[in-house]
Structure formats: C-alpha cells, structure tokens
Length: 113
Image (cartoon, rainbow, N blue to C red; front, top):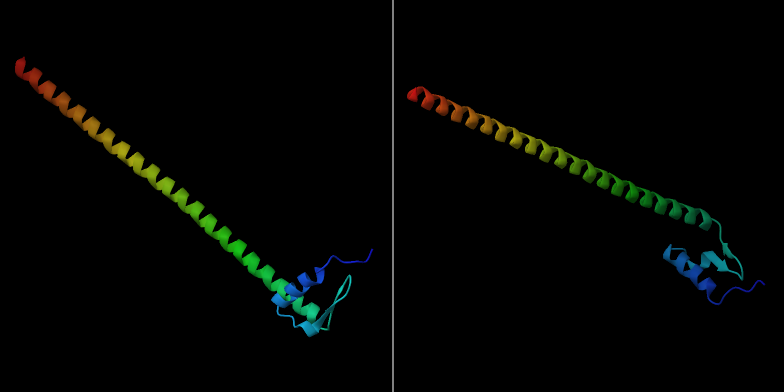
C-alpha cells in the first residue's frame, strides 16, 4: 500500500535542487517530503515569481498580437482609401475625356453646318 515507485524521490530531489533548495533543508520519506522551517515559504515565493513572469509573458504576447491586429486594420483602411481615391481620379479623367470629346464633336458639327 504505502510503497512508492522506485526513484520517485529522485524527481523531488531534482525539482528542489533546480529551485536552489539545499539537500540539508529537506528529507524525503516513503510518502512525503519533509521541509525545514522557511523552505515552504521560499517555494511559495518561487512559485509566485514564476506565475508573475508567466502572466507578464501572456500579457506581452496579447499586447503584441493586438497591436498587429490593429495595424492590419489600419493597412486595410489605408488601402481601401487609396483604391477609392484612384477610382475617383479615374472617374474624373473619364468625365473630362467625355466632355472633351463632346466639345470636339460639337465643334465639328458647327463647322459643317
């Protein structure tokens, strides 16, 4: 019943070692890990710091994604405006050309008649 898998304490040692907890500040029993005074608070602070870094990373990525989204929208608006302006210029030129051809036609008819 209370047997732990072989080397399950090794994982605890690796994690605590990676977090900078000295070997003399904890003991690994069959089913529990015993921490000396202050180690639990140290681990909580390390956990909190990790969560703060993770939250900052998530927030930064969100801000970047949002900025790219807004910028893409601005580009779409700019391109739409440019296309509308180009269409307007084309229409103005078409009308000017039509007016000029009508004037030429009227002048030709006046010369004939």
